[in-house]
Image (cartoon, rainbow, N blue to C red; front, side, top):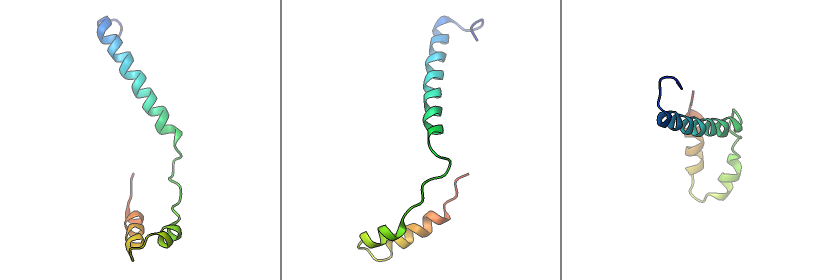
Length: 65
């Protein structure tokens, strides 16, 4: 890259790479699986009947590869 690009484009690339590496470090800092949700806690706190059950059903059906 240093042979074919100008000094301006090299500086832009290094800035982009630094930001990209920062994003990657933040993503890798999180655990691979999300923490478990305590649905019973929310069922006790939310006054709308069936709302938490519906969220739980939708959350259970969610699949992110």
